Length: 219
Image (cartoon, rainbow, N blue to C red; front, side, top):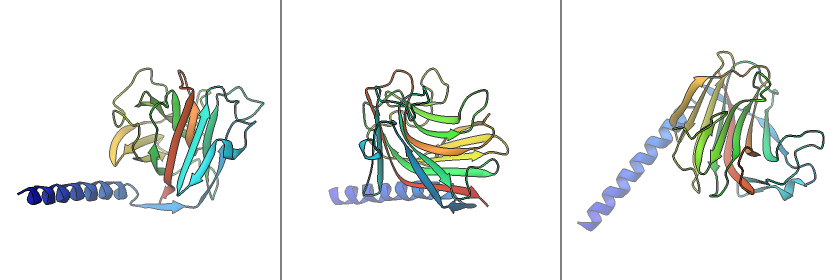
């Protein structure tokens, strides 16, 4: 009897996992993977290896709340981010997608972990995914909203962000589940970033980890 229950549990777990993988894979149907490069933006007085590592396929980025900005000529807050660029350069039109696995260790709060750059009205970002005490917030929100998993700390989450630059619309999926489907006021030139960028009420140390990062463009 116990063996039968155990076997059934394994079967159900495998079935759910296969369904999840299928829903995630479907998000890139009709898209073509793009070659891309990246630059690590970090406190200007630190070397890259003091705020970034790439080990066993995992990009780990961290920053401290008392760190310097990315340049001595800016008053922006501390950051360590991967600034991604598709082979053809930043985009102004078309439907583009960012994909990757995200891990945020407990304690990291008051931080943006992913951005779609190119906002309006003086804003540099069309979208920010922020973490506050384990909860996710969309750019500009003032209180936790039902945006993705209730607690993102200490587990890998698959992230898909689809940006339609022509229709000015954006969708965000976590583990294949749609969490945001909204108009996007962004304009101009766009690109993706991930890592850590300090926001209000930050922890002393902020960290995020990323793996399996891809950029896609709709055919």
